[in-house]
Image (tube, rainbow, N blue to C red; front, top):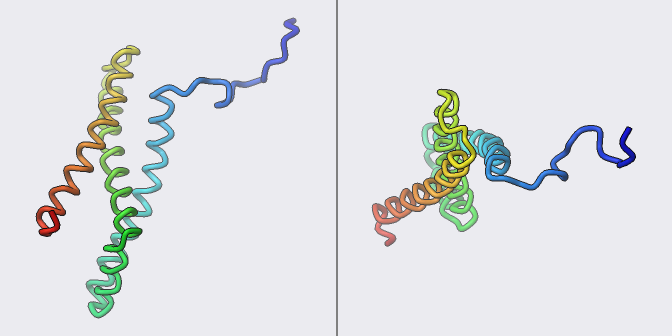
Length: 131
């Protein structure tokens, strides 16, 4: 029997964070964020459909700095969840399991998420006449 005192089961504090673990945890967090954002979208649609007089108040709330931050976070969550889901689909087909491919695809998810989110907001601002 070994004399070293080690935990009975490994825990997150023992492992060095890797791209796969960080993306896995982030994928779950963005899933929850998408649920919250979808509830916000449903509220927005309900307000527009049933009480148009309150549409201005809701629009002002979403157009504030806090509202835009929330919407940008929802956009990030949407694209991250999409691209990481595509990555998982390739894994389901048995492709990309070697360590270099896993690391490359993980960083690709992060980079594509940032590019797609910024591009979406740039197009939205351009179409709104803000830029």
